[in-house]
Length: 86
Image (cartoon, rainbow, N blue to C red):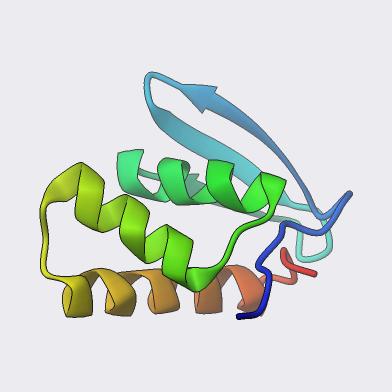
């Protein structure tokens, strides 16, 4: 499994009431993360895998594993598109 980790210096962020506002520095784009996105982001800051992120969503929201994996893939792809991941 490949490690997913936020690239050092890629963004600055602040969590407010369970949601996160971040600035993707390379693209100069602000992004808003809801509660779920914030959970995934926090895990990716320390380094994780898609499998672990999927497990996190399944445990937290009791959703179908296939749906959780799809949501994780979409979130990770979006982060990659903004140059946020190593």
